[in-house]
Length: 230
Image (cartoon, rainbow, N blue to C red; front, top):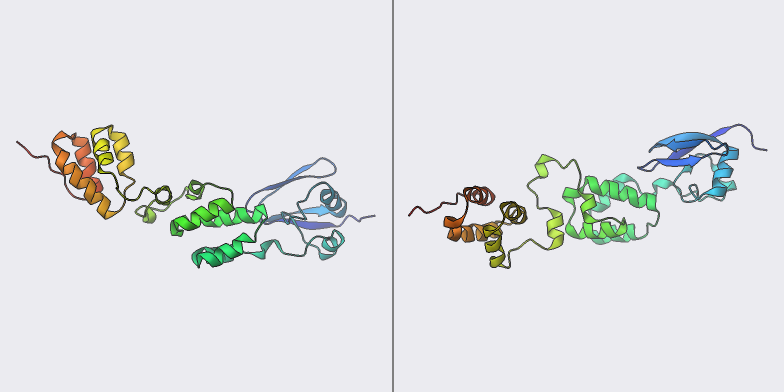
């Protein structure tokens, strides 16, 4: 018969983990915290769910882990610092390491770390990480993107392939059309040579552009678009 001793059960995920004990009490274990659980409930939980076997929850006791035949492999087999180092390093080395990971909670940690490093990741990395973590590339955009990174190219635009002007007629059409649509579409072009093309086309059409469009093109291209006075 198990005694009343309680053991630390850790949640080292980036998200809450909920459990229901034998007495139907529901417990929500916060990230990087533990809850004290007695042996009877540990064995009960191990019978009805795979949280311990999958390392989603960690029992801080070697004997119980051995009795339950739970792998001694630590949850932190890859730390946040290691994830950061891999994301900053060679792509192929990163891919080899991450391809071996199959546990959802570790993939979530990779996603969480990568999201904080969004501005330093390449389009190639984002495509790979999105597939690995079952996310969309847009999900990696930090909600708290710092002002110092506002001038960097939007990687979602890079991934969509719209980084160069290949059809001048499209620009002409945007300049003739709705202001908000024009602003939204032209704002996707970040390269200097693209802005020069936009400015050149706009200069030829300046006489037919509204004051608002003229001001926007001037701001976008960094030089004043002048409407010729006849």
